[in-house]
Length: 90
Image (cartoon, rainbow, N blue to C red; front, top):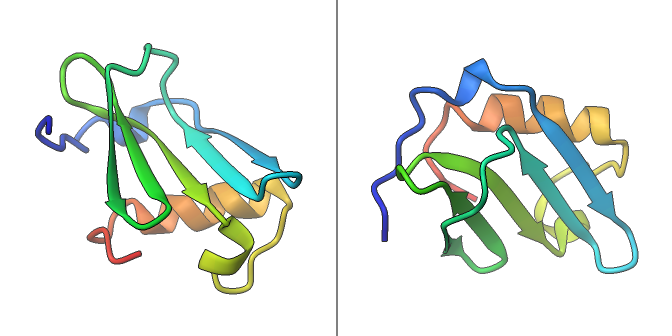
């Protein structure tokens, strides 16, 4: 496991995609290739770059994991913007 480094998270353009067919929400804030991924809880996966920075998150079964889930991507971005400053209590 690479160390979690969230210090630069706010300086990137956040992108979100919801795939309704498989109920997966993917949020990224950097276009760097994924070096490693880590499941931090069932169905919640963090993606890391080569330097160990968190560059994305995938939430499987998103509509069941996120309270008041909306497939509206703008809502998802706002939701994750709040979560990124909290501990990973998914």
